[in-house]
Length: 383
Image 1 (cartoon, rainbow, N blue to C red):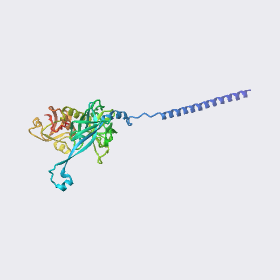
Image 2 (image 1 turned 30 degrees about the vertical axis):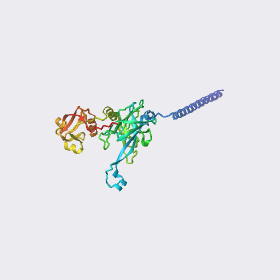
Image 3 (image 1 turned 90 degrees about the vertical axis):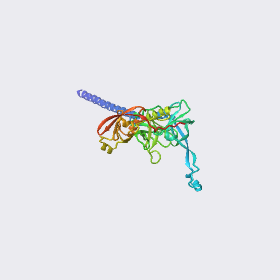
Image 4 (image 1 turned 30 degrees about the horizontal axis):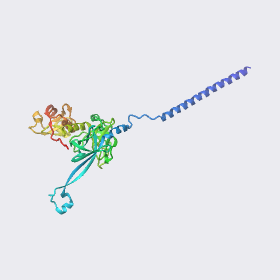
């Protein structure tokens, strides 16, 4: 009897432990299946875009593209008759018949900046134009009046007879940062309303042959026909007017330039008000960038500033106490970094005002107050 009881207890114990083992194994399998299910669900969930990913600017492009137009300018090109080989065959070098005229066309882009028909473009697109046509996104062709043009910034302002036009809001180009995303919109090779994506490659660039130097560099594709088009930031704001490219082939090589919106807007305002851009200057002095050699000779601690190379004794600057060899190191309290910055501050100074120049002379700091007068380099164009 005792033996039977022991055997029964042992059997029940074995069954109990077997149940625990089986239950444990089933729980582990369920957890494993549940884990696999959770993992599969995670794989099917779309990943969240990281902050460094490519931006989705489709909405921005859709909103601003209808504010970019095609610009066609017809020019009268005059060539001497004597340049024609057939003419020279019969008449030799006699140029008494004068010139032969032919009509030529230049194509570019424009940006609608007011709903009542003001359009910004490049000066070189409409230069010498006798007839300028603006082709709207809806294919309407409108004759444009040249309100004014400014060769120094390569900005021109047109006016078309239209209302309730779509515009691009102005952005503040002074807040641009290198590597910020931008869109270039224009009509390259007559491919209307083309949009390209890139970044701001650099700020404050200088271009050979331009008197005002403060260009935005971008790698957004800019090609012939893009001139005068819009450079837009990721918020859909106009932060530049595309103006030039660096290219050894004539096409896109990843280096394009735009006039900053703050400068373009100032030029536009003055063209509307005066028909020309009024710029300030200091008469009677000749300035030069401070090179390393000049800095050593003049005892300057660095190459920041502008050197007074020569000046007229009858000038206001001479009367105020400025002398040849002086180094202008500040302009109304703002340190002078380079020629481009100084030229920009000088040109934007109010005509008739007096500016305070910080001057370094033989190691001594001086202050000179000189009047600002209107520069004679302004261009006036009306049609």
